[in-house]
Image (cartoon, rainbow, N blue to C red; front, side, top):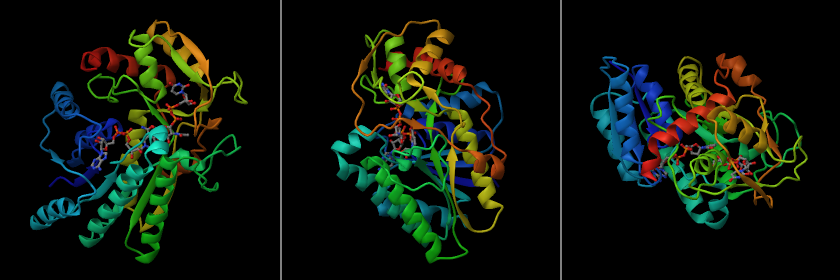
Length: 351
Ligand code: NAD
Ligand code: UD1
């Protein structure tokens, strides 16, 4: 019998890539998603990728539309699994809102969805004795650290509402772990900057005409949908004045979840905080130049004021993740740019 994994937010950008890996590895995948920031197309395409690979899978993807803030909805799902005398091997919790800028204007939604939604989920998991969880945390919780490489033991000092919700969820998970010693297996994966798409070009980050993040915007400019990229700040204390981030390919990131899940399941109860990034930082201008070069396109840009909530540099010290899981990033920045563009070209008609 295949192991069952529950993925909240599984039809979103990161979730769909994780589900693809889970599916390929033979897990039965249960996805909960409200579809507030995703579409059924990602699911149809997940299935298509598998068909194209001509593998004869006997495992299944179950899509359950609903909101993690709705406790009775969550309970129904867990009751259904318990009735079959089964339980989830692990939960990968990604459902949530993720825009830093939006969170500063709309804090109540962020606290409600991210924090209340997580409390509901944990309560139901606890009730049904399902106590293994991987949580999508973020490097934004380190705030304005002056360190070149951010290690997990640095102070948690988020400087935006979104980051505060992530830090709070980590705190709740820690409280839960210590309230019920020996039972929970928890891994907070602190993502740096996920980028790129599956090379098939069939799943990727949902488009909108006014995205907040760098990669979607690069595609829009290269694809002629926007005139230029606004680069937020050319006066950061970096090698070219633009801010540094640690961009990690979405499939490397997804694989980190599989390793985390297997590690938790085969080791004693514990709570882990782990950075998930490559350990290499690139400036906005370096990313832009790489994107132009590998995709043979032109990206016009203008410099603008720094964006509220932004920081100079966020680069992972990923030594713990490497040591514990033997994880290392395999996919380059050039390929992130190629795959991101490939996804855009194949899907721009959905804009
Ligand atoms: P995404 O928006 O593509 O995916 C989130 C999914 O959650 C979406 O499919 C959305 O419909 C769903 N969702 C939102 N609210 C929900 C609710 N109340 N109930 C059920 N489903 C709900 O975002 P993503 O980039 O795939 O991010 C996934 C997770 O990783 C998020 O928790 C995000 O905060 C975290 N994260 C993302 C990044 C990044 O740069 N993309 C970085 C660090 C952490
Ligand atoms: C942010 C959050 C991260 C969150 C992620 C997803 C921080 C420090 N990090 O990442 O936790 O999960 O968003 O929403 O808050 N840039 C431009 N022009 C643009 C877009 C971006 O110059 O049009 C610059 C930004 O200033 C930044 C870099 O590109 O320096 C990357 O930005 P972005 O892709 O938005 O990611 P972060 O802000 O690092």
